[in-house]
Image (cartoon, rainbow, N blue to C red):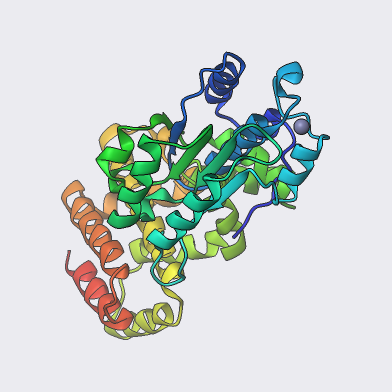
Length: 336
Ligand SMILES: [Zn+2]
């Protein structure tokens, strides 16, 4: 899902105040490094920040305003996504995402030309963890010996997948997940939901606006209810099979989501058992249901079930048959 958030100033980016201030200062003092790496979970504004930075780097009026002016030809072309000195690159391929060497070569031939409007170029590489080794090594050469004034902003949700040689060339900026009040505020501004629901979804989102919006689309609360029923019910054999049938009819992403809810519910139950502190649990709105389940499981049961859920989450990412994965899971679940 693509979230369109109109962006004309730094203030339009939610949260990350320190990063905003640091980047603006580096811009002002002309000390911005030529290669940056923004890392952090998906859906928290890394790409928005990169675009705001790119727009500011390209705007000829930046010096007076300390930000992109928003009205010059450069800013207008940037907003229309056809600025000649800006290059955006991201993985291609639906089933297997990959940034290929050809994409890097194409970018390299573009940036070898002199800039048209500005006196510099900006390249954003989104989801940079999908650079394969050849593409990564080719990019490395450009980072080591850039032609002219070029700024690279790499964005990733998984820094560990990026070549260490590339990492060592970049100034690394970590974006923390947003706090749930910030997420709730965005949800209320962008979507037609009540404050209560915004708070519940925000708490479940793990600090990602993207995830929160997906939750609203997918009716996350209904999926969470399915996860909760795994903890509440003692299934008979007949119920097990109908439950497996019901789940197998959902797509993999939804099953994944149910299992992620189950994982959070188990963690909450463990937290309640260990800490006796119910203020720190994720699923605040159903704390009564969780408190009722306290007596049903001991810590060993909960840890064993948590391992099962972590295991199925891994298996769901493989190509194995969904029905077989679910059968094994439910049977193991009953035995633990
Ligand atoms: Zn401008």
